[in-house]
Length: 106
Image 1 (spheres, rainbow, N blue to C red):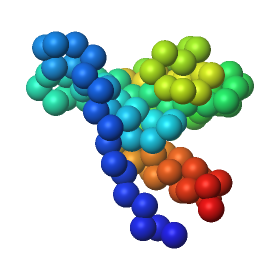
Image 2 (image 1 turned 135 degrees about the vertical axis):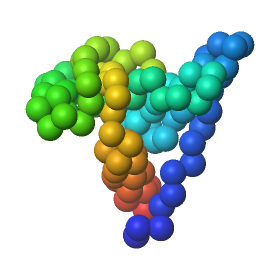
Image 3 (image 1 turned 60 degrees about the vertical axis):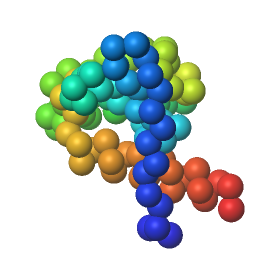
Image 4 (image 1 turned 90 degrees about the horizontal axis):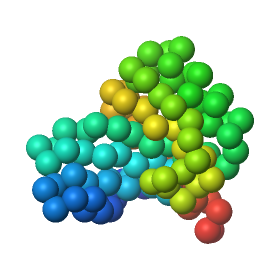
């Protein structure tokens, strides 16, 4: 069941090229007009789960900074907005989310 691939949905945020890139229902990034990733968003069903993830990515140096907030970019109630997130973590989280969603729909 590892045949999932990430299909990025791009949403233009501004006319000068800022883009929201939705990798899965719980993972998205924002890139600049030059294609540089500026922030990453990880979605959670509860503030507690978001805080636990925030503490982990900071403690493990997976990002430079992270905040928990009510979701503005994702369809989940809470999100962690992170800066300078490791690309491998973004891909890992998106694939895990896609696998879980695929299992639910089977």
